[in-house]
Amino acid sequence: MLTKSIGDIHREMANTINMVAHEHERVILERRGKKVAALISMEDLQLLERIEDYIDVSEAERLLADPMEVPIPYEEVRKELGLV
Image 1: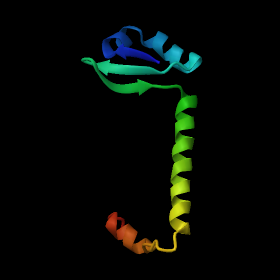
Image 2 (image 1 turned 90 degrees about the horizontal axis):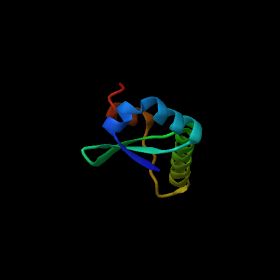
Image 3 (image 1 turned 135 degrees about the horizontal axis):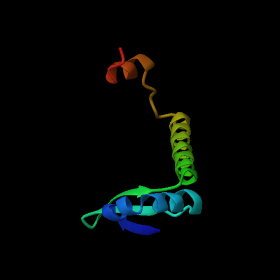
């Protein structure tokens, strides 16, 4: 994994994007020495999204299987979210 300053990224944008996209290099972006973001390939992003989905589904299944878990009515959720 590489660490680059934002200034370096500006100067080397095309090369950095090629490294991320084609070589699956992960690049951490720094601003004033502080890590602020990361560049990852689309494949890595899709993998992260699949992991997040798996965690969400697992948690939902756990809650649905818990007999002590009280379901919240759909209309109440809509009202709390300001969708009514």
